[in-house]
Length: 136
Image: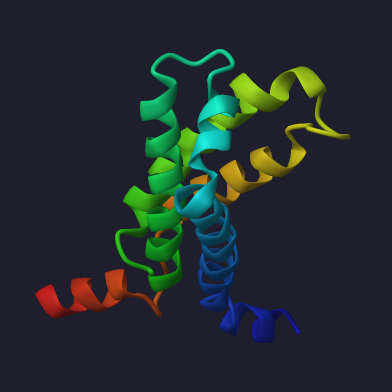
């Protein structure tokens, strides 16, 4: 059984990229296409340059999500998402505790998955892999 699982480990980054990418596309889309006023108001709590910060976060979420799904610039997109999620955990969700309403359990999980993708890369079925092979 372990040898079968080992032969399928190439699927892991694809599953992680696909799911987390989709989550960030949906979250970023909601902000960019109709929710920026509300999000900017939400970001004003404790952050400098709230309008700039809100737009930066929404753009990173949406386009970072697209990049993750495609496996394009995966490490860079993951870094951006890590930064956004670290700020969300520390500045927005921390006071609510780990679990419960508004807690940091979910954003911390997304942060850890993005960090994992940043460290391991996109995997074999990705534009990153194709571009590296093309250079060789």
